[in-house]
Image (cartoon, rainbow, N blue to C red; front, side, top):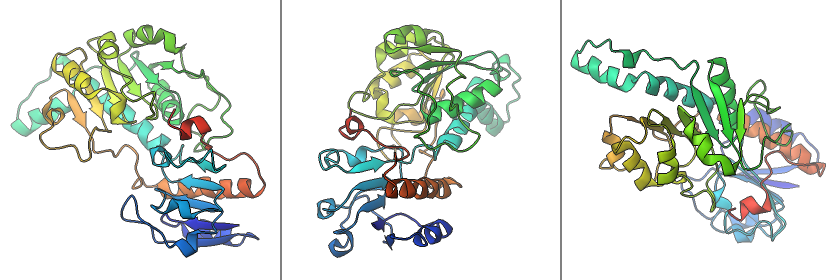
Length: 337
């Protein structure tokens, strides 16, 4: 089995894999650009590709049977017709659950205590002990729109802080999640933490009872622009929106209007509509918004590469035994649904 690796290497894991009988591993220098051609001679007979972005000459890989990508999002696989070519694909779900869950908790604390305003006061030498800076998280309600790994780890942390956890999910609480990578001791593998679970038909009821809305959905054809004016107006005016998933899940114009007209109290946004977000964009200057530059979980997270290679090593063994792969993407997902 020939494997082409086009991501940064974790040497101890690579050495262990190379000791396995029957594996030929060709490591190529990771690309600086999202799309570029790889040496056709080196990739033409590959059975497995481990990459972030498929090469521009992906069609050269006529023997390919499995693609492991180094990201949770998988839009880079759209249009490759992997299901039609009988090529399996897996992603990096689980690698970012811990840092993104912690980002969500940090943002809830910062928003509810208005830490941003306190820092402005500090810069201006203003002494202000108003009650708005002394609110608690305990007893508030966080709503998780989507209950994948990020939602489950956020739920675990939120429960430890005494928050109520509500979940909106199209497919119900799937458990146990034996086919998805989970950092040991994290998340909610058994699906027992939510206090209430809502179906898609109950969206308005779900939104109406929240103090925080955390968006945790993948970006697909069906979720692009899923949250618009009606959904934002359904939230209480004291509620905050957190988006560590993908910017376009929330309609841009609706979000700006909701923040300006105070349909909601504020937002914490780690994912955006353009990269980098232009300095002229109105979100930068809104006093009730915290912007972070897509760092809630990234390839620079301290444990990302070891977790990614743990997924790949486990999947390599599973693939060689023809077992179910971790983080397997369905044909519907690969077709953008």
